[in-house]
Every structure is written in C-alpha cells, then in structure tokens.
Length: 154
Length: 184
Length: 296
Image 1 (cartoon, rainbow over the protein chains, first blue to last red):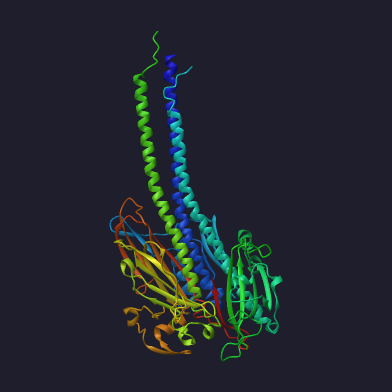
Image 2 (image 1 turned 90 degrees about the vertical axis):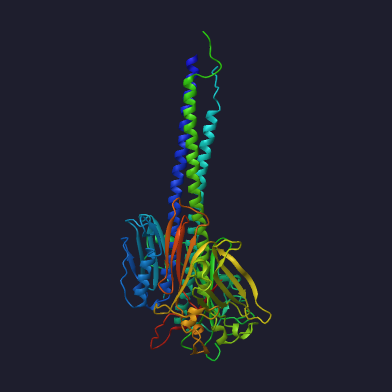
C-alpha cells in the first residue's frame, strides 16, 4: 500500500509535466506560425499597392497598352533602361517589386543589408495585356498566394 | 481508497495548458485580422477598377453610337445597383444608355482561378446629359465658348455578379466621369 | 506494519521539487517568448493597418485632384470662380517643408470641386506629437469651400492619420515619366523658389506662376510612406538606412541604432484630372475629348 501512494504521485507529476509540455509546444508553434504569417501579411499589403501602381501606369498610357506586358519568374529583377514611358514604368515596377534600396538594416560590422520581400521559386509577377484589357497576376508563397486584378484600359 | 495528497497538480497543469494555448490563439487572431483586412482591400481594389472599366466601356459605346445621344429616357427600371442615390449631383435617372457586365465577360482570355475571381465582380453604368447645378439634366449643357455638349458617365463597380449585386449587401464603388465628343 | 499517512518520502520530495522547478522555468520562458511575439505581431499589425488606410485615402485624393464639376465656375458660392483661379491651386508639393523628424519629408496639398457648390482642399504633412515626444505623425486636413467669403468649413482639422511616421515623400512626374518640379502653389519653400516657382508663364487660361501651371502637367504621383512601430520590437539595436525616391527629390536617411521596426509603403497613381494621356487623333477624329473623373 505504501508503494501505491508513491507510485501515484510520481505518475501524476510526470503526467502534469507532459501536459505542460504540450501547452508549451502548442504555444511555440502558434507563435512562430503567426510571426511568419504577420510578415507575409505585411508583404501582401505592400503588394496590393504595387499591383495598383501597375494598373495605374497602364491606365495612364492606354495607347501603348500592349507595351506593358511584363513577366518575372525568377526572383532577380534587373532594370533594362530606356527613355519611353512604358520602359521607365516597367523599370519602376522591377525596383518596387524587389523593394530595391528602400530600407537597409545594419548587419555585422558596419555593413548594410537590403530588406527584401520573400521570394522563392514558384513565385512569379506577370501582367497580361490583350484586346485593350490589362491584368495583373502576382503569385507569391511558392505560387500558392495569387493576386489577380483586371481593368479595361482602352 | 487511494489517498491523493497532491491532487491539485493535475488541474493546475490543465489550466496552464489552456492558458498557453489561449496565448497562442491570441497571436494567431491578430495576424489573421491583418490577413482579412488585406483580402478586403483586394476586393475594394477590384470593385474600383470594375467601375473604371465601366467608364471605358461607356466611352467605347459613345464613340460608335453618337446618333443615339439625342433622346433620353427613364432608365430607373433597368438599373440593378447603380442607383442615383450614389450621385448627389443628379436628380432622376434620365439617360441614353445603360449596360452591366461581369468582369469575366469583358476581360477575356482568363481561365481557372482568375476567371472565377473576375466573375465575382461586375460594373453597371448609365450615360446622360450632365446635370445643371439644381440636379436636372433634361436638356444638354454645352462647355462654355464651345459647341461641345457635356455628357456624364455614371459608373458603379460591385464586388458581386451583375444580377445579384445589391447596394445593401455588396460593396459598390461609384464614379462620375464628364466627357465631351471630339467631333462636336 | 506502520502505515505512512503523513509526510512525504525523500524521493517524493526531491522529485516534486525538480518537477516544480521545471514547470516554473517552462512557464516563465513561455511567457517571455509570448511577450516578445505579442509585441512584434501587434506592432506590425498596427503599422499594416494605418499604412493601408492612409495610402488608400491618399491615392483616392490624388485621383480626384483637379476635378472641376462643370457647374462649379458658374455657381459656386466661393470667390475664386474663374477657370484660371480654380486651376491655380489643384496640386501642390513643397519639399522638405514640415520635414518631420529627419527634416526631409514633403508637404502635400490638393484641391477638387466635387459639386456646383462644394470644393475640397486636402492637406497632408508631418506634425510633431505634443508633450515632449520627438516623434511625428502624418496629419490630414480637409477644408470645404476654401474661398467662401465667410471662410471655409474645416471638416477635418489635422487629424492624426498615421502615427509614428519617419518619412513622407511625394514625387510627381509628367507624361514622359520625368520628375516634374516645381509644382507648388502654396506653402512653398526655398527649394521651390530656387526651381523658379514664381516665374510667370502663359497658359490657355491666362497667366500663372510656373509652380501653379505645372500642376496641369502632372501625369503620375508617387507616394512613399515610412512608418515606425510605436514601441520597441527587436532585442538588439541596429542602424537603419532609408532611401525613398531618387536624389534630390526624395530622402536619404541614416537612423541611429535602435530597436524599432520600420516599413516603407509605396503607391503610385495616374492623376486622371491633371495631364490626361495623349490620345491619338485619327484623321477622321471620332475620339472622346476631355474626360475627367471623380469618386467619393
């Protein structure tokens, strides 16, 4: 009978430990999930306004609408130069989609690192212009988060 | 009968489990709130561009139908959601023409997810003489020192399809555009 | 045999103590982790929300800027009722005036007449918090019927629109994508004066200053908004560099090391009521002429 009393208390304590452990792990998982989700959500917020920028540029240059087709499937945006409005606009898109040179953080010994939106393979930023209609197809999160926006330009 | 001197430990552990889970849930709900707000912004953006598409659609109609821009009629029964209540500068619903479309029919070449999304948005517009300062638009007004008549395109974009959109239930974006014909 | 009904064995006590300490340590570290996560997530959520609302409103105002209701000039109760005077004040940007915490932010004013009897004059600039707080917020003001003989109606007076703004930049471009300066008709500073803002030019509506006339050539407006978290978020202080726009029209800041989180939001809009897009005139000209739009 003495053994029973000892046994119950240790068992009970171990069970309590496990329960607390489950709670701890649950909170950790939910936390790290929401930290990540919040960062992605901030980027989505900015991307919504960038897609507005794209449609506005098309609407402002309707006679050259077909020149506003754009396709970026890797995460490397290099500007292409040019003096026409549509070339300048597309370079602006490339810079803004990459958040180039906007915010830099100090990292290590005095060097600054660009703050960039997350871009992985499977992501793409496309615009499609045909028949006087402009469309935005922005895919992020390995292509799973899809942003569509369309307007009649001309 | 088993003696449980330490019986309080188990309920306390369960309480801690609940508390820690709640803490995690609070964090998830804050980030979920932001995600939801982004999604609403998404919808109001497309509704706005739907209204803009209505204006462009109307302009195209006007270019090829200048002969129909002389007699107005009451369009009240033909309007689903683009009601004059959105346009405080106008009294009544006299106009030349009205049209409504779902975005997936005017934005062609789409498929799958994109087409489904566009089918959930629509525009409705009507074209009329621009009103006077008292809101009446029974007769045409001309741009000062010219022979050009002022027309107004009243266009609404909706986050629902054209047949089911109602201003009470849907988000409607209302735009006015004043145009003149270059040929006048 | 004696039964032990009172007291605990040594083993029991030791095990209980160890388990108790582990639980307390776990609870403490969990609370600590939660606290940090909560600070980070709630601050970012606040930034996200205020930036979203601000850019939506600013974009809508810029799209409306310069809209003149066809009945406004003839019937408005305001005293500025000529084509020329209404077009003199449609859009105005003054650089580095009310420059905010780092002295580089811009002052934006825009105007439109949405009905025969009402016009709206909207102002955005950075203002300092009261009471010794060295931070700035983006303020928004709306004045109805600015030129009414009895004074206009201040609908919104320096509303705290976005808290803790580090930088606010407005860059205007013409129909060729080139930066357009000076576009300034009121609240102008030395930068605009140096750009020849006061030079008198002829326009189809009469004579105006260069700063006023240029407003009618604005085709695109770009907005940068850099917001800071109200409270500290990071555990390690680090410096931040912010570059909005291109020199010399934008900003270039190096912020001393601190633990705040910052984000820069960008939007650009086509100012539909100012420079309209070039319309190709076909020889048999069936194109639509003047078009302006307004949305509430």
